[in-house]
Length: 425
Ligand SMILES: *Cc1c(COP(=O)(O)O)cnc(C)c1O
Image (cartoon, rainbow, N blue to C red; front, side, top):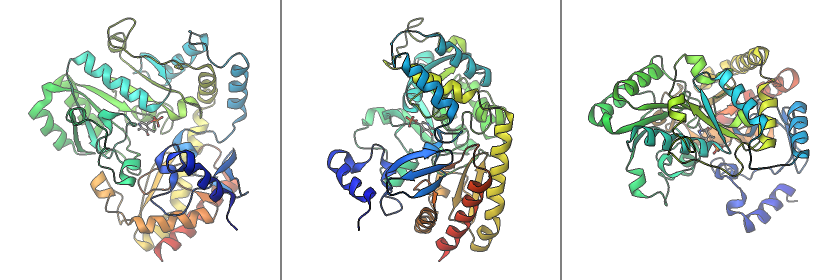
């Protein structure tokens, strides 16, 4: 008998391209069909056929407090009861911007928008407008959303589907984007030597998470900071994934490097479409209506998203980060033996991690691409049938939240260990 998920996928394909509203959800890289989700509660997802999964995707990193966190649900519901959008300023937006600045002191001024894609698009426009330069630098395999100037060598979804950039990105737009390998300071320095005075900004994931989890090598972020300062280019940390996740103040706090501009998304909306960008006063005050650089959004600062974001940030105290670290260490310890035995590897920064099907964890995208993706697919499918929901691609980081303790943590460790054995066969 065909499952309800399978029937829904057939229906969905009639009206939605591939049946999904974002390509990686289609499971193309691992074979099989995605379960359709009926609901989430805490650490668990439930599909329409009644299967329960420990969720290690966490809405691609957006959730840090599990599904249907009572505080977030109450805050968002209460906000919606007072109207779901006004397109006018509200007090809550001030409080969320203050909460962000409190945790990210480099974000002296903040603007809210609705997706990570928007945040990076606006931050890049601001960098170009403020410097009067057109060229931007991104790292091979880093993902900064689905807009034209960064949809060049963009990792994960793009990598998974094997689309080089994408048709539809104008050659002229892509021509202003330079791509260098992640963690390669020498290549970046050489690029700056050639055309440093044309470079508006470097945009980077301070911990890469869209080619699998790839931590920055010691000195890398500091080196990017110095190069940008030397050449009058701006440094943008795209912390859409790492913000509030790898520490209370993101990667910039964890690694002690200050960017000029920061982009946030995912966790800061508590599961709602909300994102933000911000940075130095003198830069942010060049945005309209104060300055000439245009940026706008009808639903920006949406009351429900703002309420959910505030309710999330207010719950993220030190004990949350201690729990995340302990749970991450437990997963790492549980997998150490089978990983060593089968010659696979592992990378983790706080509550984001990747099991790599190659002997050592990669430091850049070229290395990540040498992974045995067929072994990953076996790993993924074994985990799924064992009740552990992983991102369906070798090049996507897994994420967990502060509720992953006790029974759920044990299930995750056991399920992943068993899946490693299946992957090796
Ligand atoms: C997810 C992500 C984005 C894009 O955010 P969306 O909300 O999906 O548009 C941008 N940058 C990074 C680092 C991301 O992980």
